[in-house]
Every structure is written in C-alpha cells, then in structure tokens.
Length: 382
Image (tube, helix red, strand yellow):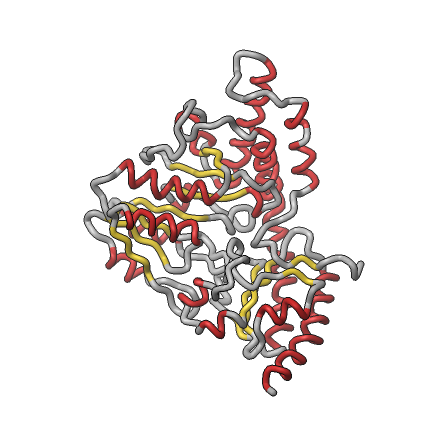
C-alpha cells in the first residue's frame, strides 16, 4: 500500500463519487443540459427522461413506486420538509415524538416546531442505544402527529425496529418518518414491508454526489411544501432540478441495489477483523453489537482522548464525532444520550468502512492502532 495515501475510514461522513456514477453524470453538464421542465422541445424531454429514469432507479432501491420519490438537496432538507410540512398540513395535531439519538436534522427541526407551539417528546435510550417500544407506545397521545425514528444510527450503526414502530403508530393513526440516510444503499430498505409514511436519504452516503437526496412520500400523506415557486416535482418542491446530480443519485442507487449483498458480507468480515484488534487493545464497544450496520465500529479507549488518537494517526481518517458535527468540540449527543460521561464520549471514535476499503488497509490500520494505543494509554496513566 502507498504509505503516502490516507487510509479513509470515515464513510459514514461521506463517500467518494463512484467512477461509474461520475461517468453517468458528465453528459448532463454540457450535452444534455436542458431544463427538464422544458418538455416541449427535444433537449428538455431528454433531460426529463433522465430525471424519470433516476426516479425509477431510486424507487427500485427502496421498493417504492417512482411517483412516491421527490428529489431534494439532501436528507437535511427532506427531513425538515417532512417534519414541518406534515405539521403545517395538520395544525390541529400538536404533538410530535422522536428519539434522543436522532440526527440533529431531526432533533433541531422538532425543536423548532416546539418553539412554534407544538409539544415535543424525546424518548431516551439505554446503554446500547435502544429505545423502548413500550415507552414509545405509552407516549402516544390522541393529538400525536408524528413519530420520527431513524432506520440506522449514524454513530453506532444500531438498526432500529422501524416496522414495529410503524405497527404501533399506525394503530393510533400516527405518521412515521424515518431518516434512512445511513441505511439506504448499505442494507435492504423496503418501504412496502416497513410501511413507513416518509423516508429521507442522501446520495453522498452511497457513492453519489453531494447536494442531492430524496424524500419518499407514501400515497395519501399530506404535506405542505417547504419551497414554493413554479410547482416542480408535481407541486411538491419548486425549483429547477439539478439534473446531473439526480442522474448520479439514480446511478448510485442502481449500483447499490446490484452490489449490496456481496458488499455487506465483505465489509462485515473486514469490520469484525479490525474490531477484534481494537477490543484486544482494551477498547470498549459503544452500542449494541447487533443488529448493526455491517461497516460501522464505535469504540472507546479508556484514558485516551479521541483528538490525541487522531493526531497520533495522521495517515488515517476516522471520526471523533457524528458525521455532520465534526466541527463541534462538544461530546457526541448520541453517546451522551446512551449514558456515557462527557469524558467517555471524548475517548470514543467511529470507524466506518466502505466500497473502496481494502484488506490491506485494514491490516495497516490494525498495525498502527496496535503501535499507538498502548503508548497513549501508558502516557495517560502517568
């Protein structure tokens, strides 16, 4: 392995654009560049056809109907729209419920609603990151509008029982939104089987471009638009479509659907090899071992600050916080919600493998952790 190359172990933060995705996108910058809304001429129809092909590719990935997919700038926009748009469409239902370990895009959107007069319940979790289905059911009220529960946690990889949440909520007439940003393209996500009402994801988490994502909207769900204008996307979201990125999203979805099973098996084996080494070095796992995303490790090295570890391993890239909060010096809100102290949280790191992680890179990471961790632990104990 080229020792000048950084070993990238932060795929939950973002992924590189797959070369096949980039190739699919390129013609739509300069050859098929027309506005897909301009369907009365051939260039516009060519762009529109590309958008609809991408919509079908995304729908196939999550077992949806293409008409249920609306393109957005990413999961943050999709989640904000789902939460706020649902509340605006149902102003008589003034209670929403979510979980303490959700992504900030969900938590902050819900907190914004609470400042506008909605009541908010945030469920706690146990040491493994699990919330109680019984507590969730008990927290539902006659005026509960929405339960927002992520499909898989971005920091620990824990997979939540979304279908069970839907079963409980549906019996009470409550909508369910799931942030599937870390799950889509990594593990099977089937909206028909789970019966969720709303689902959000971003292309850049599964080897597509940044700045594009989607919201799945189950038939019959009423939302007020977040963006008003020319009535694009069947009136759901106004604004000229980002055709190249949408094409890239579609291609990334197609590749993920084809390769997902084999890739998950490969990554699980590599993850387990590396995790075993880290645990042997004295690391403690944060969160449940299963059910977990096949590529995610979250561990704590007692006595070793994560920033010290990152500085000691400049040839490796891993996360000392959540995927979208790396500039935030505060301890992870996910780990704190799981009961870790502030000190334990800043002794924790997240490693996430991906499509281009090689066995050679994992062997190198094992070697370097084995060299560095004992030194830092010894220095901390002095």
